[in-house]
Figure (tube, chains in turn cyan, green):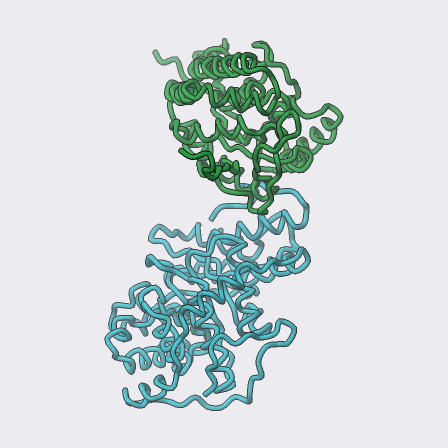
Length: 330
Length: 285
């Protein structure tokens, strides 16, 4: 298994060579899964942090920045996950997702809206068959503390209501207490319940404590059939960080080289500024290459980030700093 | 103490959001005294520092305006107290920067501090002077209430390093605005000292932000920035006014063009950075 941590991919190449897809192994015993995960090398924590710190200082020149901002906009999963969500709020969010800047049709639409399962029908009715995806969190988001039957029903309801992407949470308690097979089987079952909908698996890296755990949980989720692995729910103290994104991207890269399967990464929570978003894009480009610089393989889960991207986009186009209230709030 | 003690040299920083950052650009420039001798290195603010200052000023303005007018006056008076107790230090900076006699420098600082006290007194009189009850033909009260424009960017006088920043700064602040002050490029030390004092005088961080740098670099960005509501260019050379005003018009802001520091001009300056909100209310039975 290739797992040379902290490999640098040259920006010009499309990144890595992805072999032909081969079938994922399935696991029925705890020990089989454990043996597979043991093959993963440990993460060089100091090296990972130093690497992202270095990449974070890279400056993007004007034209690159312009296209990076548009790319970042097209990668946003515009999110509202509040107890106070109303149908009206979700509807206006969907409108904004389709036309982020109502005064400028050249601004690309975002990748998806992300809502609670009971709001999926509302979101779908506004978006219709448009290009913006409807994503729904499911499986007792954000804690994941419910029985498998409840989680599957939660998923199925969201899919039936029109969600084409499901963001599930893993059972962190089971993972941390070493019950890996339970986590694996839950993901497999939810993937099955998703049908054709894409499955994003939320690792909640803030609760996994170590980078090694993040790497192992990433691998586990990908083995179980995740289409995306996602950092966080945004509901705990520690959200997405650059080193965690790096660790997950490296796992995704190694997985692609091993099984020929390209899995996406979604970073969520705490990303509010264009500067932050561009740092993530640099890390993506330098870790897995330009294949992943695509809304199909990289996403930002965010709400306030979009307005800052629009502000900076306006600045890049007009040369003047724009007023924040030029864009609708969320 | 021995004579060969290492000199403790000071590099003057910006004041943004109550903190003292260096310029994000990493640039500094040298400030020299009236005879061309090196005094200090000073941070040279970039347009991105200005952008950060605007974000801070916007957030702070609501907080500043939500305090009572009486309270705002107390805070400005508090800053005048701090300046008074560091009178000698400011006067020394004025003397070095402007190359004037010590006595003259002290007088200039006294005038500046007196002026701050004058503005402290204005805060709870603005509503009476600029607002009022309007006569209407109906069973209603109709009030005009002065409210601040919001974020004001001001450029300090190039020569009068302390006295010449008081009016452009505290007129707008007394009216409830937050201010981004661009200090005198050649003589920024008194402004930097005032910034240090303001950080310990109960101003919410971001109400007063002080940048040091080049007028020709920052004034056009101040004029075009959409999130700045007012611009005081009285101290900018009048040949630049047309461009700055047209740019300010593009982003819809109030502009004040006079540099006078007499009371009539001061009152007009305050009024420039005030909007009028009109309220109707029934008279009742």
